[in-house]
Length: 225
Image (cartoon, rainbow, N blue to C red):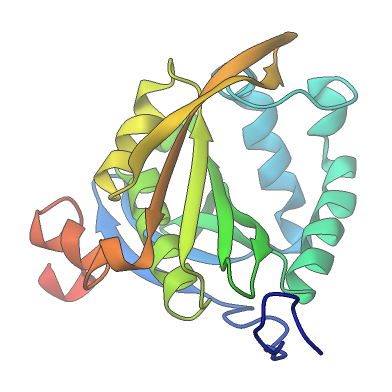
């Protein structure tokens, strides 16, 4: 079979790098790890999402239904099942973020495209109680290194509202760079909002994002304590 660009098509493994775990990394808020999402995460996922509505809703794209309906315990099985199905097809890496082994947020590497592009997007949220404590930075670093190494990807991108200074700092600390502005890109809280596009490629991470953060003292490895 030909790709149409003069290069033979070569079949790839369906889901390299999945299922997977990553970490631990030590940050001020505790010990951060990534692991696959579980069906039994429903109660804690819902509790955090409902409690942190004001903190999270201002940044997240609009979805059908009310916030309470979308984030009720009963809503989790269908979301978990959809992410699990995509992961089994090699189209996403859906992680739970844990702090001291307690569910504290989500990180998804989605829309995985392989062949010549080898690209995906990364999105994340963390509980308000651990925000500002290095958790999101550690999670993004772990996921980025995993995507480029075990996951075999070449490029990751993230879109963030310009007003979301905390999330922009997370990406910048993880080595992501600004590429441009997407005008009226996503509908958030009833309005079409501009988003900045940040990205990083495998070559830019050198020995890895985690190694860079350890070297600059932003995170530590367990044996360093």
